[in-house]
Length: 291
Length: 273
Image (cartoon, each protein chain N blue to C red):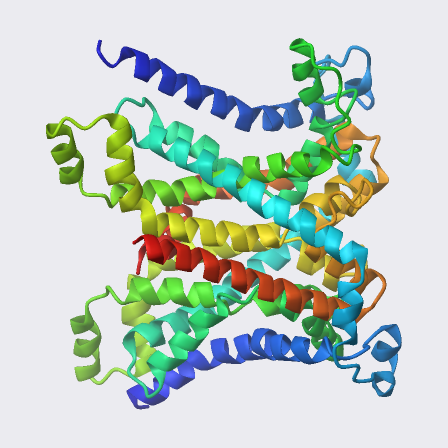
């Protein structure tokens, strides 16, 4: 067997699987979003009709879609900023020479990243319990009256953002720590010789050196946070109260797999993909301009 | 002495953050050791009065979380073995075997990283339904076997292996299959462990896809079973905390052993240009 034959043979299983279970479904998904595929379509394919952009106009007129879009955007923006800032702060703290036991703290901060989200959501739902939850009891020590975290539309999304930040910042922190390690020590020494303050060193050495890593971290965070699903599914019984925590993926899931409006669900997925692509492009362009 | 104040401030921050991370987990374990209803007394206790494994016995008997545990084990192990095999072959070929169209093909694969999985989800469900794989554990595993990220990870690592070793084996007349299994695979071990840790933990934790594919509760994986139970037993806090411990413990133990590899996998994607 020649080398090039072996090459094709070796990549064939992976290509076949990616093609069959990813590329093909993505293409079909686009097509599906232009049909009225529903519960009858599953039973009998001949009932499926081409409806052009009817799903998209239906989606544009659906207040639930707009609510889900707004909630998701708030989650991505607020959750993303919190997750990245906390990751940056903890990475800088762990990289400091003054810190004792950096590996202990790193392991603690990273542990939630590998944990099962559903279990974390079950624990946090209890943590947020208005009467018996630990959070209200701690707040009570400071004289704050009990908050109905998951039952009050004003706080429910915030509660989910806090869980996501708790769960995810460690992943960003580890990547940022690795990024900090690639900044040459000589730059810091030169800045110190010039008598630069800690703040100036951060702005003029650390941040520019971290730029590629920050771009990667913000891209993965934004892409990941747009796919919010399990947190509201478990914690607020599917998007409550009053749809305050309904996300785009949850909306897609309910329409598709609870009500079997598969054409409409496919359209929601296509819109989500376009939004993610647009957000990624904007992030990338902003970072490139600065560099 | 000059550093005393920043040093104290730094550690106050680190310790407070560690407390915020650990408190929910410690509390989860404490409540899971309480008797039924104990956590909802007035005033709610922080420590179990008579710590017992009663809740864990309940889980095993009444709620069949043990079966879900077994399903999760099967799914995560199967996905890991399959993913390591498929992605190791492809990653090695993209790094080390010259064939026409290789680089364009690889670039095309990388573009797929930008497409979120949800857009494939509805058609994927219909496809698996056509293949008779919905409501089977195989249906949970199969779509995730080949992953662009996995191929990328293996390729980047394999690029750094010494080419002379492969060429020497080729001169000795070894077949490509033989070179792969006897020369390359042993050298690739660290990255394969990394990939295995990633796949196992990722599959164990996955929720949305098994929720879509599985309809029979005897086939539920642990996260799906836990979510379903916690919807039905909202009052049984102690039981749910035990279920949460059962769901999290295996991945935490695995992570403790494979920490080095797991973190490397995470940082590799972010730093290599």
